[in-house]
Length: 234
View 1 (cartoon, helix red, strand yellow):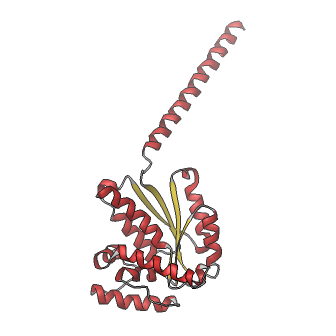
View 2: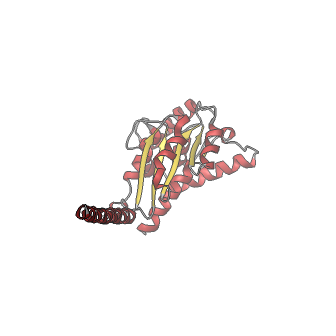
View 3: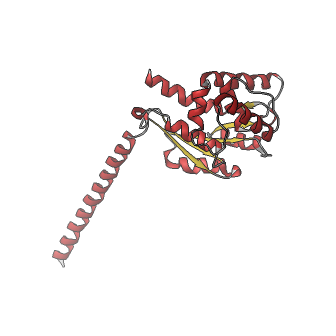
């Protein structure tokens, strides 16, 4: 009986050491993971489309110089419009200390755009919206954001502008759209134009994103990323 008690005691001690060892390994693993945190930002972009916005931001991601790809990360995901904020928060999860979540969508036929934007910003999620559609932001690459209220009209007129400037047909599923915009347009000027257009809307008494057209806030996300990249490539 006494020997069995001693042996049980030894097992208990041994078990404690094993537990401590596992905890130590977890701490070491966490340190290793922490060391891989992208210093310029880990961006999570959730959009409600498989085409234009997704292709644009995947193109921006692919344009990052090889030497900076582990220092600024862009992950693009899709969700239904009404679940954009929920998906962004769920995917941020335990990585909320360093992940930078954004949702990207346009007004189009979305009736509760103002509520979605309010919920996002209140939850710490950036809202990169466009009104009437994402094409109004891409229009700015070519030096203007024309006053267009309807998304279908905006898409048609942008397609005409795109073909005139690039000599190519515009397609919403063009995976190379970002490179073409940067190559044929002026990104810095596009950001300035978008900022001026938004300011003009507020000066005219338009307070809700649903009332602001032409306008967007997606340029703020683009600006944030390209400025960070430029600071490391000079």
